[in-house]
Image (tube, rainbow, N blue to C red):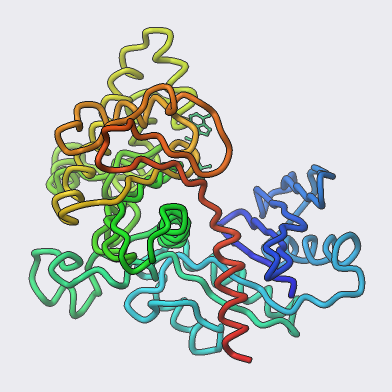
Length: 395
Ligand code: ADP
């Protein structure tokens, strides 16, 4: 079965085509700057990649380009039978993968209140995909679903009940597809049944989040109602005193929209150094740039605080699992985040940490009680797997 994975953002569509159950990625690509005259179209089949710019007026035009490319170069007379859509927010309604019906799509629209930047383009991607591929089963994979096992004493905020009852204000958590995927990979690498593995999963990409995984299930996570909470990120602040927005509103006369922009797009690494890409911040640090040094100290300190907190939550952990762009590729961040944790049973082997090896790596020193793993994430494959699994069960 060919499974197309679609991730529709506000101005982009990312796709991957997998042959399942072989898990073979046949084709992938990306359309960026949708809505602009010079949209950037990148299409790849095997190792042949083409890039060009053209007018792509909307998501429908973008998906048509992808559909034509797949029909011409990849599928050639084969039908596409399944599409897995990444959907950021499933609210309390969805704790697992769903076959998309009118009702599911209506609910995704409704949940835009909780994810105003993400759910509308996700829903738009589903609608155009239903028009362009009417024969295919369309499946939604929710980024919040893995965190549906978090208990109420963790997901509720200590604010009046009506905020939860009337507005759904609670912790939902994000990056669930990645945390779930690396949890499964780590359990199988460690040779433990999924339902008995305790992990702290550390997803460090442009967005960053950590999850305490107890018996294979998410029991706490650092993002909250929105992806703004928790760790310091590329452009997002992560945890700050909740009084800061009131202060900014009163003292700096900023509007809610301006504060939202400030905390989501001008903060994090960017706020301290002017750069949101960690590689640039590391480069600046090498040139003795003080803000870069401070930003890296802050970034790693916050990871360390969550490691301590989640170790307390779990009681014991089999492994810490680093993943995503920074987690997989930055020995500096891994080392600095874990320094001084020997008394907690966490000790990195510096030379293993500095080796660059592909696939799952084990980085702990011999004396470390807790293992330290790098597990490459693959959200596209995880979506293809979940889509394939749901459709196999439906048969
Ligand atoms: P996204 O959240 O967009 O999926 P990624 O998982 O691709 O992001 O991670 C992007 C981040 O990973 C960027 O901050 C980038 O600087 C960082 N990164 C990528 N490669 C390296 C590297 N070799 N060393 C340090 N950081 C890296």
